[in-house]
Length: 419
Image (tube, rainbow, N blue to C red):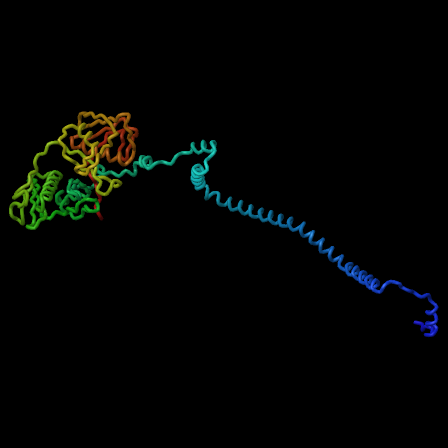
């Protein structure tokens, strides 16, 4: 850079020749003007950042709701897809329970809010739930358990029938058990040996066996000797003496015994507190026939015992009519439903014909099955061998084929012995 050729004196002289500048404004006015200019300068400095911030906020308010709406829509799509996937996996397993839930929900809505007429008409066409009575009427034949012993039960078996008092000492219940046949032993020996195996208490009966006595059986003369100890329990009351007599009378009948001799520790006769001294037992000839009723010692839902009462009735028709009535004095129930009406006809060769009236409803269930068993056992007491049932609503009840003649049972009240 070239050095200036002007001296200081020359510069001063040159400046003094320039026109003078004079400002007539008040100094405060000048100061105020300066301050105003400085404020405007500062404002200009923040104009662009402020505008940029405002624009950013505006874009934020515009974009954020759209972004949130888009995200919510995306989430819903994911949820919907997941629900659809879960539903497709559960449809098969829930297919059986959905109708039941719908029925229950429909009933609640109908009660609380009411349904439209069209929906109510649709619900009225749905099948109603079966009552307990309707269900019980549909018990299948395979579930009907026989109470009696029949010929087909006797293959290689011997039937033994025990007269057992009930717990109230009101009735003598014939209970039949099956044991293996033994040609080397008499039926009475089998009868005596099996006494201790009876489970009367489990059956709901009095724990009566084995009898507190020793037995001697003369098969040739068909005579039985019963020897009791001095402290025997059969003389405590008139009822215990009567029960022993009834039990021994049934033993005579079932084992074809003609006479029973009574002894006490080898000495002739037994001294009873009410009957007095007795040396033998010869049952009196009773008039009438045995008629079977139901006994439920273990409750009405259990299998009944068929208990015979000797009635002074000499016709099978009157006997079957009597079986429709309860015997409250003996705690026995009717064995034939009162609403079942029929006509009876005695046919030659030991055949009884029973024809049901059209109004009678014959159902394949367990009560009807046991009613037929009671009819067959009673018919046996009147010397019938077979019974033919006609005009029933069904062809089969339990094991009974109603298109065929039914054979009377061998014995009543089959029960199983413990192993």
